[in-house]
Length: 408
Ligand code: SF4
Image (cartoon, rainbow, N blue to C red):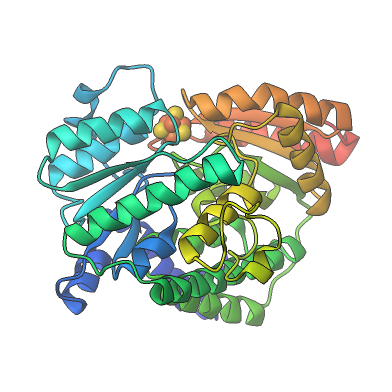
């Protein structure tokens, strides 16, 4: 859209595009050459605390499937038909050697598919480190909090056993500071995109955010800032588009072509959950008791940075489909979010057969109906190639919202 020759943000965007499309993890291979002996640890969607890995001297690598660039030859034979696509492409990448630079993988408790993929991975690659991270669904610091902090310490100890640095409080505090800075830069990008969607189109913001999958927090922050500096300099014009929030694409990622399709259909994507791992905890992670206030409930002490990570997840976790909280709370949050970003409507975009997204959707639709907020929805697969039907559907939705203020 804006990446023509002479675009001041062009160089940063080009780098982000290369990194986003880097299925063979060349950036990770280069990082390992530059950091001999250090480990690269893969993280499956949606969320694992990256600062913990950085504190151990590791590179945290977001593994998000093969997108539309990978032919699945062997991956299909490991899973039944009626599940999403991402486990097939992750297995394909693993068998094909694309994930060889990774010394280990963390499978967070996103859903049964990720859990089963973790089991499959352990069988396929018994020599590589594999961890299942059981994220708590009890948000009491004395119960879920202590359990989660214990899980983080266990995983840190195991990765240290594989050759990483030992867990050190000061190193973890520094890593949390760097993560907070990265997230502030991402928030600034979201802010600019909401104010002027044509200056920071969602398809570009997506690439810039996703590039962080293979970068340290510090390098990612630098890339985001470089892109934003360029975007500020652009000459852009505003379009008469509708403002939409896109929801449900938090794990298996839609092809970038699909995001572009929504834009071409007259939608400004002013908020989304595409790269939810960076936003699972909203706001900065506390670094002291003062910053945490009473969020530790007397059971967790934010002066200990592992406890601080647990507090942040418990208390400031985004109300997403992978978090078991009341439907009303999620519905209220979505309505507030739509109003806050001044969106005209919501587009539900869920990966086909994604249980967490599709189970939440009817409850969220009900909350939107009650609030008079128009919405539409479709399903996709990471390797969807034909977007014409979605273009027509999104185009009809944006026209209807513009003309009548509601969905067709
Ligand atoms: S796309 Fe949905 S069902 Fe598939 S692994 Fe991700 S969260 Fe689970």
